[in-house]
Length: 223
Image (tube, rainbow, N blue to C red):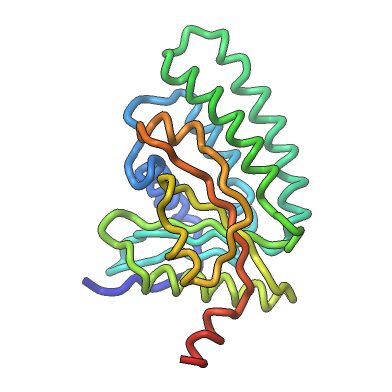
């Protein structure tokens, strides 16, 4: 299998990003029931990166988009936009709670509201000014691609004059700590993810990490 290559995101790629986002929502698997507020939630999560896509990339194999890395190096602008987007999201989903929707969708909305507030609260510990999200389809996940993602994020931070960035990773409790350290991440917090714990039927944590930009390059040079 060819190694995925990072490419600038073009407008047609966003449908692929959306598909991968939902296909891998539950620790690499899709949500097992229909959600009527899906488009509204996707707008909340992805719209900022879609409007400012110059720093983000897609991972491509033989013309197929198999992953993405979404980068933000202007945390203040992001948080201001997310505040507005969050209010819009609330205006659209809260009324659904009194509509005749399924019990599963109602629980999804309620748990995501709680998780979303905590994720926003933990997004930028120590005010480092940048963050990133990345993802890959099943079958294409490898340490090589993750390193490509990390090095790209480092480069975007360096270009913006920033020394650190943050990320949030969902993992089953007790997993990934050693791997994260190998990539130069430091644990800032670990918070229960109510939504994914419910959907995955096991304890899932949202791990917030901080990484010094450029540390991977220095570790390679020293080895």
